[in-house]
Image 1 (cartoon, rainbow, N blue to C red):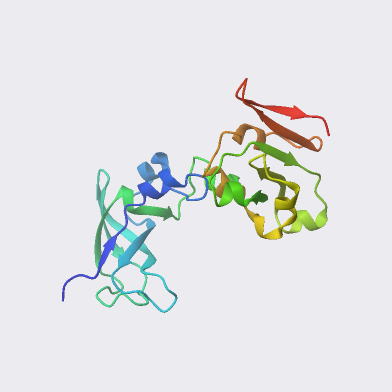
Image 2: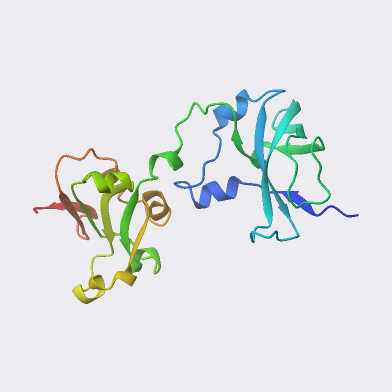
Length: 210
């Protein structure tokens, strides 16, 4: 039987979505040694009952030469028939999505998990963020991991904004993946409710009085 699976090179995912997809740092990869566990994505030709065509499984490293590894599959696959626990797996650093070691480099994906409100103009139409508003949080906001930020393209009408279908409640990281020109504002500590509007003459965001 021909092999039905292949390992996913995850380096492209991190480039496309750096604020939501964690990729182990080069420093962490350098620390990996025999006996460590790493997680890989095994893509397969058969879609499982949950609609996925991949399994994420742990592999124990048994040898290493540079960025090339040999390991032992530490999980029992759920639906990849030609893979069994303890099978030998050959892989490269570009296939590793997780390790049981702590990463010495903070992950961008962990920094922007709080959620924001964003209009469809930005979220669906992929227009740049041109207006940002940050409001004070109450206990309910904190419980639902709301960041306090509302993001918009800036020319949405009142009628547009009154339609709930034009709003989305998603992670800040998901929006930053589309446009991160305003990231420095997101990183500022909260001191008061504030609105920022893009100034095309200076190509900066100006703080507005509220």
